[in-house]
Length: 239
Image 1 (tube, rainbow, N blue to C red):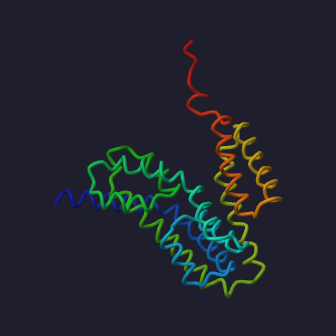
Image 2 (tube, rainbow, N blue to C red; image 1 turned 60 degrees about the horizontal axis):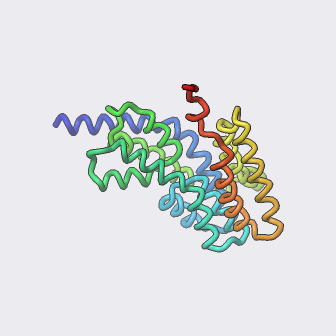
Image 3 (cartoon, one colour; image 1 turned 180 degrees about the horizontal axis):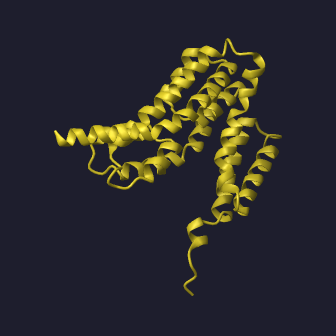
């Protein structure tokens, strides 16, 4: 009985930790849904994509590429590259759940986002149970899907100017994720500029979707040599 109480308590703690994320996911979910419908998705397709994918930036990028006429292969490849970080993030999350059942860990891995990863991996090991994470993603997943559903229904009632303005949400999301890392890191800022220039040049000879994929890969390759690891930069000199 004590074990069940502990699991229930962990689950509720995870749900409470996810409440701040809820206030961010719902508006961005609405923006995604409006963007997806402007791209030609039906309300059902819009919501189903959130149910099956649960990756805000990737969904918005996929909707944008679809609106530009990109092919299925290009969309899948671009979202795969964008989400490669989830392989490492999921491994870190699952590693903190050692001893939990495999099925629960696989379910938890599906719910990994930048926000849930940041919350969970900063927990003390004593609190980082699989039930905590399941409680956390119950809130984040439902708020994302709920925001998508609200946007899918409300897009037909919103003024065209407001609907069009929400299309910049993708760029705002990327900037918000990028700025904290770029500040104080000249090399990373330079890499961002070089990748943007590379994408602009490639767009002159390739379709925008393939230019995005190629410039992302080239930028990542350049980053291996250009960007200095924070741990190495801050490590004391023992010489």
